[in-house]
Amino acid sequence: MKIELGKLDHPLVIELLEEHIKDMRSISPPESKHALDLVGLSADDISFWTIWNEHGEVMGCGALKALDDKHAEIKSMRTSLKFRSQGVAAFMLEHLISEAKMKGFECIQLETGAMDFFKPAHRLYAKYGFEQCGPFANYREDPLSLFMLLNLN
Image 1 (cartoon, rainbow, N blue to C red):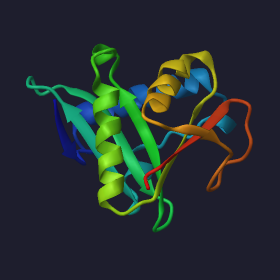
Image 2 (spheres, rainbow, N blue to C red):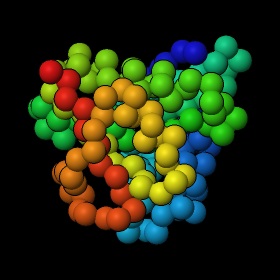
Image 3 (cartoon, helix red, strand yellow):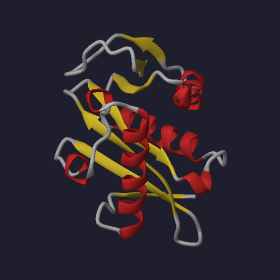
C-alpha cells in the first residue's frame, strides 16, 4: 500500500468519494450527514490523502482538517468496498495521526455515525486511543453522531 497526497481530480478517487457520499446518504438523514464532497475536500484547511495498491487501484482515503493551530479533525475516512478488512483504514489512520503530530496538532477529533453500520469504525478508533467526547467545532448534539478525540501529547 502506498499513500499519496491529493489526487482529488483522479477518476478513481472521484468514484470512491461518490461511493462514500452515496453510502452516507443511504444511512443518515441530511441533517446528520457531515461527509465532504470534492469541493469541501479542496479547501485550504484540508489535507487529503489516498491509498493505492500495486495495481493502481485506490483502496481508501482520509483527510485532516485544521480546526485551529492545536486541533485537527479527521474527515472522509473511507475504505473502498473492494478492499474492506485488509487493514486499509488502520494504515490511513496511522498516517493521519503521524501527520497531525508532524504538523504540531495537540488533539485530533472526529465525528462518525452512531448507528451499527459504524461499529467497525468505533472499534478502530478506540483501538488507537480515541475516546468519546462531546460535539466540537460547528457540530451539535445529534443522536445519530458519535464524537471522539485523541490527545497527541
